[in-house]
Length: 514
Image (cartoon, rainbow, N blue to C red; front, side, top):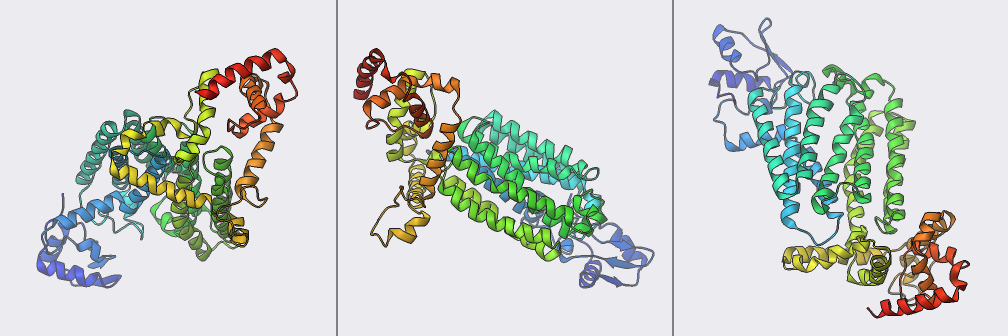
């Protein structure tokens, strides 16, 4: 319940006290009675002093509470900036699935996730109200400052949790709603009490941050586990480590006053915090390479992502070599722009955004797989684009998808050698055979790895397709790198059997006409 307005003389005294850290005044019995009704006023009755009163703490004093004031309090309970970060990661997970886009599902996923984050943050502040009052960076929050009662805050947390579950269940799927509820429970019932008991709370809290992009992917695709979802979750888990270790070490004294069990509180030199920040910065450096090798993204993401990661590792090295507030601040500030940049590049380079030309190039391979292997795969997002006609009626979806694909086409041509040699040689498109082209180098490396790690099981799965590829000379079908592996292995084996060759020619010619 919000506190009503105080008498004018009390309000004037509190405003005056807000300008100084501690200001003594003459304590009268009338004034003492007035102040006892206002938890905002931090009064030491024995000495007659007011301490640590901020202008934000007295927003409700001397005036009627307005809707704007209430919304500001709810925003602070929800930790609006942190919730906005959660929405961004959820949206990235959703958009990683490519087009076409169901905007109603996207809206439900982002709104539901933001409400879940608001609920978890509110419950967190309810449990930690006494500890927050001891810390300089948190004593102005709504609960420690007395601008809202604990029952009121708990009711707000329960309402946002309920609304989140309903929106995610109806607008997305029960799977997404279950993930949202699980995250609220993990954050408020496990992570929050663990902060007062063990340093491991940071690693548990990072799991909470890794779930929202998985929720976005699940909302878009209906599935839980996929390379895209795993890589986004891994990125979020690792990113939180240098981000938080830099922040917590910079505020280590404040956390110590609050009684929290943080690595930084037991690390006066900063060596442990800096070492952990550096370690997870290196872990993040592997993400662009893994995403490219697994065909989750194009190879240009390996180039762009590695450049960004190199700078992040450089700052973490400086923090490790010389732990101080300045180097910790640089790591923290870099982490704020690092995440949207890397996630944005990852989404734009996702192979799920392939346009019709790219899909057409891989169409015949999909026919082979379905006809002879009985496989039903989402190869090159072929299935999603087959149903895109239904979504193309949505003008906004069609416009957004077209813009993303236009950006992808520009980025696909943006190779390192393109700027260095392309203009000089009069080229208008990147030369994908150039030895300095990341796409060319990546494909060659992947083919080499595929040839050197064959398996007997895989060799027996694709003989028919590879035999026909040999007979046609590779002019009809566009095989991916995995299929080229079997081509090389099979070239010196069964292709001398004339009966098999003739049979493959007949069936292959029929397939080619379909």
